[in-house]
Length: 230
Ligand SMILES: [Fe+2]
View 1: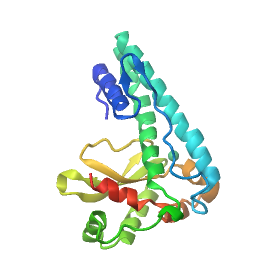
View 2: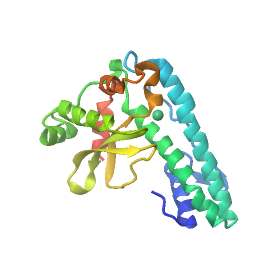
View 3: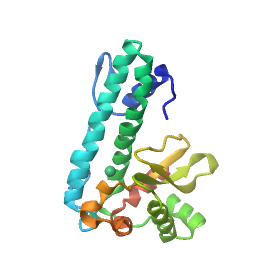
View 4: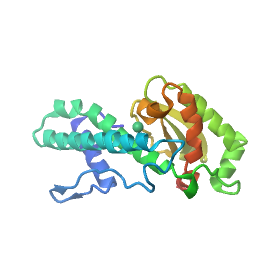
């Protein structure tokens, strides 16, 4: 989370840039861009339609990317002019669009066509599989708890299955509002689930419980296992 001083805001923005492929190189700073997908947009059907993925990726995610780049440019410009109030005012745009960028990058990587292992639950002898069994008894129970939390989100938001590095790697399920992302450095997002209407409405209309139930058929647990190792 960005702190409320102009200097730290710019540092945070620059830190984001350094941590992405958009590294600062002298005075030339490349911009954020959409991540490359590992699958075709229609490859998650019938669980998530190609039309939804097309709009979600090429319109919604692209908008967060573009607006994040604009916000960072404005922050750098404001810093160079010593406009502290403008820097402070830009925090909301950085939080919203930066979160939108990060959350959707997690989301696309969290998904996989069934032909590429989507929906295959973590093996019981993997570190993640053992931790889930220890805490929840089964993957199905963890899914049930996550779906209950997703159903409880009022308006737009996200659910994250996270690993807490500060308590021995315990797993937890948390939710955030709007595009807020997980900024606590002790929490590693294993799976991020988009509960915005744009993620399901064209296919599931108002029955979002069906969307929450269906998406587990294309969840990339291999990616979650990989993240759990961090
Ligand atoms: Fe989304």
